[in-house]
Length: 327
Image 1: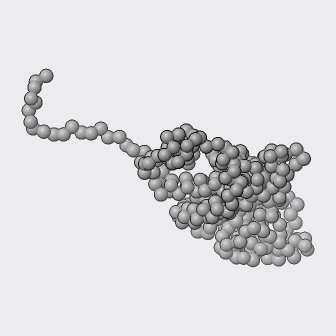
Image 2 (image 1 turned 180 degrees about the horizontal axis):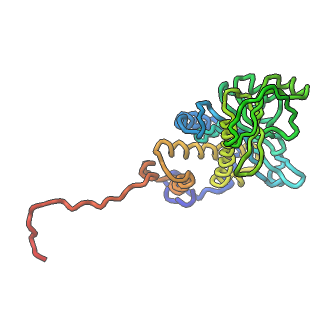
């Protein structure tokens, strides 16, 4: 903002904007204002990206769930106690992989276990949820299945599983087994009384065996394995947001200020995604963000600012007149 003093002056600012002014605004203005703005943009972005390909033959909506931890100063953020020497917050996110578009964001102290994020969600019938084994809780998995939704997750190493039937698999694709059954231990079976599948897969790239659990009985085993690989998109989302939207430093130290800045970051991400889709931009999203960040007050249509304009040298007009002077 201070890089454009002339523009600020015409907007009514008579002096440079201080960081403390932004901090006071973030502390005093309710963070739910920015959440409401972001939710409107989420609806628009999801409509724009609804036809995006997932790389697998599925028409279902596919969500990835995960969290990311941001370290904070214990002196400035005592309410976010994490360890004896530092504070931290955790950003829990539900990501629609067609985009990808963040659908739900929940901010908590870093000490809150990831599985508690499932209690904040309303599960969509027919949708598929991808998450790692840290979210495995049999009662919560049953709530997903009972709502008509599906999940694909990693099985814990100590899982006890009772096989009832085996399905044929394509071993040339890395599949080792596809079993239908139930949890073996009585408590686990009470918490999740429905049948589910255990799929064993060998990842050639990482040279390790992976075991997946899913309640989707119609999906092919290789599709379940490939879907779980798509869960990596949420890690890329966190990396992009942290690297480009500066979520490690905050204006204001209260929970309201932190949530305000996080939802502003989500809003910025959504605006970039919407503009890129509507203008059919190519190249990296970070390039679009960088161009927008240095032209915040330009009176120029976005398509002229962001789209590559091919320069054409004007052609000389054709005329039959003779020159007045011979040079």
